[in-house]
Length: 192
Image (cartoon, rainbow, N blue to C red):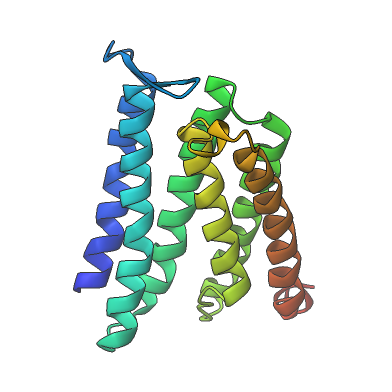
């Protein structure tokens, strides 16, 4: 397994740590920033999430720069993103920071695209993420990080950045899903 794929696997392995920090009541207390009270667990969870998310850029950079792009990496990288984002979104619903219907839309798109990827892989076709899919992923990551941080520093203004970012993420999620299925409709034509 090459270095980019190891980095992707490390991203997947950070997910349980994120979940434990966010969901186990350690009683670490909280900090007050302006009028906002931020639990230390949410700050630590946000940092773990941000570090894990950053590895998405790092593994892709090394894979492209050093010619280490593999079919395993093309499969694992988007899977790692989906697992990380899905876990974080479910935590946000559990904490009451994100509406369940928005999270259902995002996760449903991820399952649908993953299913299509599996169909295409079964036919020997591996589809790498396109630019719209990458934008979708980064809008989701930004929205999740902002929600985990209780909209700081924007809550000091006050400006509802986290809520707006989540709306943008949902829009890009739907748009990129539509685009993905439109570009790969040949998979449905062959299955008839």
